[in-house]
Length: 148
Image (cartoon, rainbow, N blue to C red):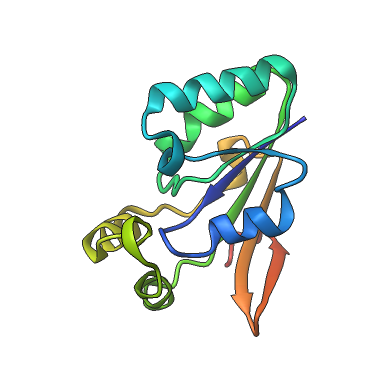
């Protein structure tokens, strides 16, 4: 089974990527929808217990924040896969400006996440790690290279 973590600042395309690539196969877990860590933990525990593949669509900007997800999934023999979304602050702010209502994130929130963003590494416990960028109206997915 797969536990997939998305890593990247707000408005970098994570949810759209989920809808295009995992909607039919993986349960969607996001604090934007669930609102509390307690609810999030319950959903993850259910997925782990039932051996259901899932995607965590949060910013997951720091190694420490990612560790709990990785440890929990590994304890249930899930493969842990991460997708790091190219974090161009300029592009994220532009995409965010196109959002409406509650979907629009205050700029200070995006900038704050950008400042604390730590690049992921395989030694965190990921079985696979990918770099994702949106170029020329299509998703470009590359196997992680520490020089990226």
